[in-house]
Image 1 (tube, rainbow, N blue to C red):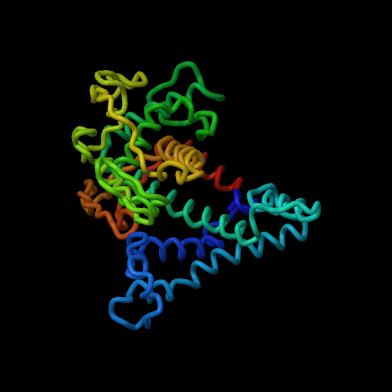
Image 2 (cartoon, rainbow, N blue to C red; image 1 turned 45 degrees about the vertical axis):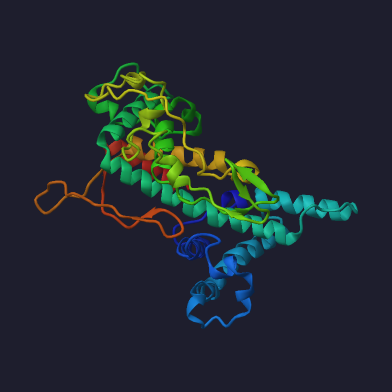
Length: 367
C-alpha cells in the first residue's frame, strides 16, 4: 500500500482484509485458464446452474471481492490526490502523467481504468505471494535447522560488522544483534540469497506457471503449436528435474555454488558445514518468462530477503513443543489448488535474546 497509495496499513486495516479476500478467491479458483469457459468459450452463454458450470458459479460468487479491492483503494487514492495529501507513490505518479498529458492535449497511452487495474494487480499479486513465500521460508527453516543455523551465522556476522558492532564478541553477544538488518546489508547476505532461491525451487507458487496463448504458429522440439494455443509452463517439473537438480526433494541452498566449493561458506562455524556446491542453476519460472516476466521481480526478492533477514536475526524457528516440553514432529501439507501454499501448521518462534525483542518492539512502535 505504501508503494501504491503512499500510506501504510495496520493489521486490521480494511484494505488488508479486501486484499486477503481477493487473494483467497484467486488462490482457490483452481488452475488459471482451466475452466470449461476457457476451453469452450461458447459455454459462457449457458445457465450457470448447470453441473459443469461450477467455476462460473465460483466466479460469480467472488466477483465482488475482486471489484472491492480494485475500486475502494483507488477511490481513496483519488480523494487523497484531490485533497493534495497523497505522498509519492505509483498511483500519484501515473495520475500526474495522465492529467499533464490531458492538459497539454497529448494522448495518453493508458486510461484511468488501466491505472486502477494495475494498482489492484500489484496489491493482490504482491501481498499474497509475499506472505505465502514467508510461510514457506518458516516451514523450511523449521525442517532444516542446519540451514537455519548457517544463515543465522552469516546474519550475525554482517550485523556485527555494521554500525554499533564491536571487534570481538562473546558467544552470548553474538546472538544479540546491535541493530535490525537494512537494505544496505543485502549485498553481503550471500548465503541467504541462496536460501531464497531454494525456497523458490522447492515450492514454486505457480506450479503450472501462468498460461498464455501463442500469438502465431510455432514449433518446439518438433512439436507444432498452432496460433491461439493455450500454453502452460510446468514450472514444478522444471525445478524438480532430476537431470538438472540432484536430490531435488532435499532443501540444499549450497547446490547453487560452484561444484565442489562451499565448505565453510561465509566462515561458518557450524558443526556441519561440509555440504559442497553442485554447480546447479538458479530456478526459473517463478516470475514468468520472456516479455511476460513479472515486473516486480527484483522488488519482491529484496522485500523477501529483508523479511527473512529480520526473522533470522531475531528469532529461532523450530517445531512446536508437546506437554513434556520436547519438540513434536510436524507434517506440513502443501496445497496445489491454483497456487502452492502450506496449510496452517504449528511452529515455535523463540526470541534469540532480550535485545532482539526490544529491537522488534522499537521497530513496530516506529511504524
